[in-house]
Image (cartoon, rainbow, N blue to C red; front, side, top):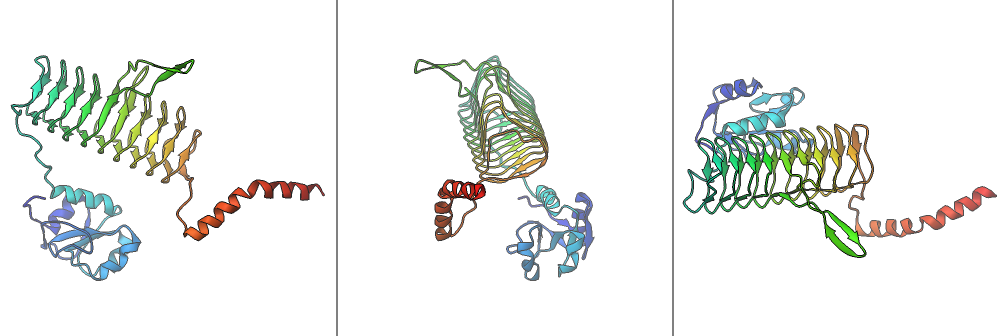
Length: 338
């Protein structure tokens, strides 16, 4: 956080919220309803925490118009409290300084081209013909192989690897341990021997993407793996070769997709989902966590599979009954014939 102090009136004007309460109340940051101090703003989007409106000490709570009467103190009213909270948090947040200038231990090829105000951390390796545009920061121990291009205002955390000829747009954030552009899982079987297929495409990442830690994005076999604009990938997501993820998609942690999958715009995929290869998921689809997708999804909507957790005794009974279904089916068929 910063040392910035703003009045509630200033905050309301900056984020387009309606203020109900004391306009001169001073704010220094944000916090949860239960932990907020009298100088911090909080928000309510989940009815599960509605009871905390009774006890919160927050300087103001961001709520919808329908909830404003439930707030005992000051309120900031907006149709989208979560997005408003994000905008207010940004006012008080200063990103960490990963590097200043160019570290003496960095290894930078003579043919690499660096823009204005680029910062390179310790032990970074930048290969031949790499281009890094203005105001981008590269954290320590990161490797950027030959021919890769990184846009302006990017933040690449330590220990990231970009293989050769990867293209990254502007305003992209990539977190530690992520690998972009490694070979796709492409092999041909010849009498039991696995023959590697050269992966000659690359990876193209659009502007304003946020890529979490431990993400792997494989390069295309023929053609490219493409991540659109404003896509967010959570930690440990795997994107196989020649996948296409369209603009504004959100993919949650530990989800994996096989090769040549096409994810549409504004798609949201929950955690630990498995997406089969060579299928298409339409725009504005939502897939709940732990689902397995094996066929195209052609219509927007919410899709689910998998079994939510149950008490063990209940789950064991269901498991036994599931195994009995074929026998039960046969018995029903026999009864129908009579």
